[in-house]
Length: 301
Image (tube, rainbow, N blue to C red):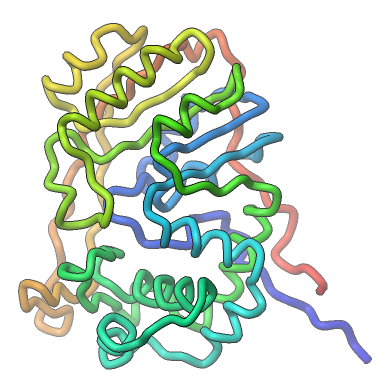
């Protein structure tokens, strides 16, 4: 009897579509990530930087959104059963509405299945229910038949990774001495309530500043924030503050909320991301990590 061969995508990208994620800024961010024993993301979200960089000895991904962490956990620990639930299910507007409004998960596996399906088929991956609209484009979105091979690659990358869902203060304060933290908090000026189940108030931005200040001598961190005067004032005590800019992708999916369809010629405008990179270290005196290199795209079961 021949062995079962499972195809991997060979692409170490986030498994999620994630509003405000750093997928399109990876090439700008990676040259600032130092090699350390412990790598930690207190606001993991889609974890695009984790998936793009070479593995660390210890990796910690944290997010207050329990659905994000549960889905990553099921991908890591329960992939075969998750793929069984996804098997043969097409991306359709009718099913998107069903899983959003009617389907009732009975356990954490089914909750991850629902969340992943909606995330892959929603406009910009927005998961807050009132703004979670159908947004799958056959030509431009990852097709359901390609989900399994990508999730196998993701599952491989998540092996041995610590996944937590706690407040960022707990995550930062308990990180081991010498850890490097990539910190991508909710934007300072944006209205995150439209996009995320968990959002920041001004008091939370101040809490983050105070938390990092009290850990500044034992941890290295890179913060990516929107370029605003308020952020500059909060972090005027940090060693390095650099302006960065990149182009976001054009969103090639239907904008159901605004009644705009690809078939009618809808194509979102390309916009620039303007952010601050804030660091408490000089990258010229640390060894910088490399992009991940996967050995092959096929693995035997």
